[in-house]
Length: 137
Image (cartoon, rainbow, N blue to C red; front, side, top):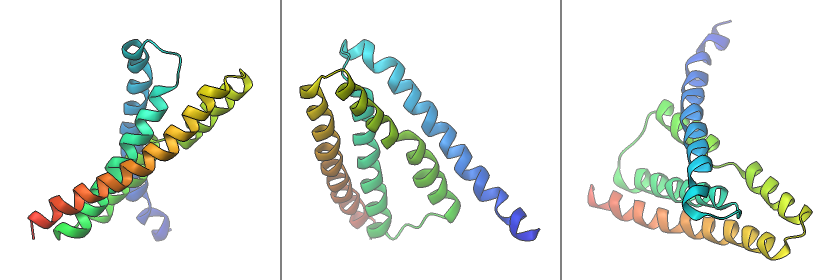
């Protein structure tokens, strides 16, 4: 019983971060199409790139700055917020729908953009996080 109780707080921390990540993802999904005036799934690409950047940036900043987050903060941000904000399932569904609609050029841009830009974002975020972290040492 005590083991179950000890998991309640971390579960609530992840759920809180997940709620904010999901709401942020929703806001991007709702408002970005009006800015881009396009049917291309830019919202999925944007949250994946931003999420990868934040993941690399915060991880390396923590690693190099000597700052340490509590387990609750790590769970909130990485598992909760980023886990809900960046949704690979949305990317996969967007890709499937483009395939199903026989929009193969857009499909290739979507797949390539998500893979290449997200990998670039995590590396750039990690480099910037490391640089910021090294200033505090």
